[in-house]
Length: 385
Image (cartoon, rainbow, N blue to C red; front, side, top):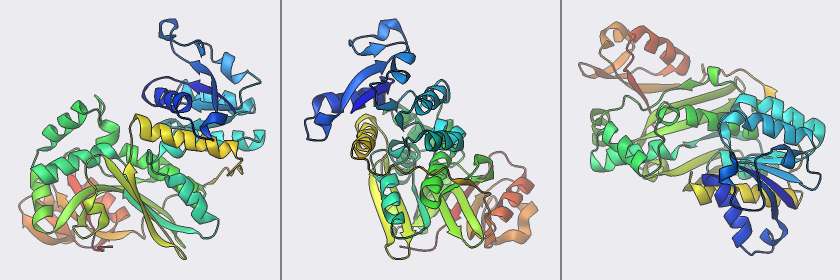
C-alpha cells in the first residue's frame, strides 16, 4: 500500500521511522512514496516535495496521512485527497472537529475512509474499541482523562504540592505543554476528544458551543488541598452520555474518590472508560500523546485500511446537547458566593462551598450570576468505581 505523508514534524517523522525501520509482516507491505514538507530547505529525502498535488493527484498513492496539524491548509489537503479517491488517516483533532461532518460526507460519497484513531487518546486503541463494542452493543456512555498535559499538571499539584504556575512551567519544559497552553488548560482539547468520541461512539455530530466546558486555569493549591483532605484527587474529566433525553457532553475538573481508577492515573497518561450493557465498563490506559504513541496509532489505522477492516463510512447526524439530565454537586471557589446563597449546601469558608445537587444547565446559569472571571468549579464524583 503506497502512502503520501503530509508533514514531517513530531508525529510525521514518527510515522516515517516506524514504516521505514520496523520489519513486521504488516509493516513490510506499507511504503511511503512521498512526503510533503513546507519549504525547499526542509527536503532531506528524495521522497520529499513541497507540492501537495504531487501527492493528492498521484494515481499510485492509496492513502494520505495528514500530520500537519492546525485547521488550514490541513483541511483543504484532506478534502482534496478524499475527493480524489484516497483514504485519509489523520491525527489532527482540531481540524476534524471544525469540519468533521463535511469530511465524513465527502469520504462517504467518494467511497473512501477517513480514520482518526490517533486524534483521540494518542497510543490508546480507543476509537477502534468503540467500533468493536458497537458491533454487538450500544455505547451508553464514556468518560475519562483525555488530556495528558492537564493530568501532568494536576498530578504535580496533588503529589508534590506545586502551585499551578510552577506545574505548568514544568510541563512546558518537559514538552507536554505548548508555549500557549490555552487549549489544554481551558478544557478545549478535551472537548475536541469528547466530540470525536461522541461521533464514533454515539454516531452523532455535536457542536463545541453546546458542550459545558470548565478548565483548570484558575485552580489553586487550596483546591487541591481540600480534595486531598476529603479523600479525593482532582482530574480533568470529559464525559459523554446517551439516554432517552438525548446526548449529554461535559468537560470539568472533577474531585474523584481515591478508590476510583482515575485517581491512580498520573503524569501525562490518559485513561478512558466506556460503558455498554453486555460488556459493562471497560477502561483503556496509556500514553495519551507523543511522537511514537501517536504515530503507532496512525500506522494501526493504515494496517486496518490495508486489510479492509472498518471500511464503512457513516456521516453522523447533527444533534443538540442536552445537559439538563446530568445532575451533580459542585465545589465552587469565588469571591462572590453570597449572591448564590440559596444554592449552597455547605459553606467551606468565605469563598468556597459545595453546592446543592443541580444540573449542568443550572450550574452554567449560576456561574454567570457570580460574575467572577477567576471562578474555579469542580464536579464532586461520588461513585468509586
